[in-house]
Image (tube, rainbow, N blue to C red; front, side, top):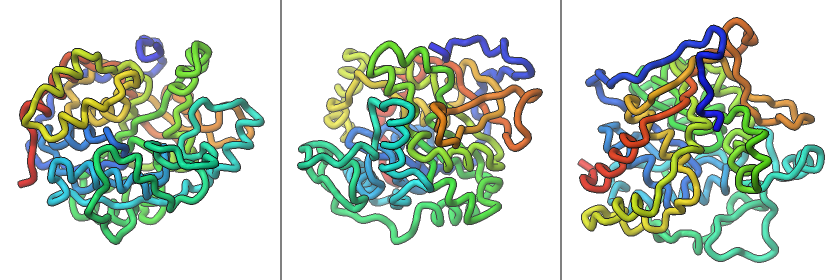
Length: 366
C-alpha cells in the first residue's frame, strides 16, 4: 500500500513523530459525517478521549444529508446521548456537483464502482438501503436498523452552527470531516475568520497514488476513488487551502485498518455497552475509515509516521483526476496551497486497545 511509502524520499518533507497530548484544556469537536446505522464509533472515540462533542453535523455523501441527520439522531438515542449532543443538518447539495454531472464524467473518464449519493435512484425502493439519486428530501425508514429517531435536528444550518461554536471557543474546536466537505467550505466562505479561529481540521479522505491499486478489483476501484472528496471536489479545494491552524489528512492509512471477527467478538462481548448489539452488525470487510480519522484526532499519540506536505484537490472536470488529491514538497508547491500533516501509519495495537476501552467503560451524558 502507498501508506508504507518512505516519507523521507520526499524533498523538503518533515517527518512528524507522535507525541502525547499534554494540553489539559477542554478539547471541543464538531463531527461532520455521512452518518449510517453503524457509524457511532467516531463520536464514542471522541467522548472516550474526553473531548466535548458540540454537535454531530450531516452532509450529503453516501446518501442525502437529511437521511444522514436522522441516522445521527438515532445513533445518539441508542446511548441516551441525545440529552447532551445536538444534531445539525447540513447542506442538501454539494457546491457544484450533481447527479447528471457525475454520470457525464463517468461517460468521459470511466465508471465508478461506488457512486454514493449520485447513484441513480432505483425504480423501486431498496429495502434496508439509504436513498440515492432523485430528491434530497426522500427518507428510507427501512435503513434504520438502529431504530428510527424520536428527536429532531437543531433549527440551524451546519455551517452557521460551526461558525458560532468556533467563535464561542476560539482556538479550541476541532472540525472533523468524514464525508463531503460542503458544510465546512460554506462556513469558510460565510466567515473569513472561521478557519483561523478553529483549532484544526481533520479529514478522512485525500488518497494519493492509488490508481495502480485500483486495477486489482471492483472493490479496490471503490476504495481508491475517494468518494468523500469526489462528492464535492470544489468544497475540498476550499477546505484544504483555508487558513486552519492545522490540517490533518487521514487518507491511504485508513484503507489499512480492519477489524477481524475475533476482534469484533471481543468488542461486542460487553453487555454493559448499549452499542454492543449494534456493533455486531458492523461490516468487517470494509476498512475502519471514519474510525481511523477520529482516532488520530482523539489520540494523536497513535500516529507512528506522518509527513508535512502541501496539498490541493483537482477541480478540473474534464480530467480523469477530477476530485483527486495532489501533494507537493514546499520547494515545488503552488503558491495557493498550504501545509498539511499527512498521516502515513498508526499503532494498530493501540488503536484497538482504545476501541476495547470504549466498550468496556462506556461514557454517558453528564
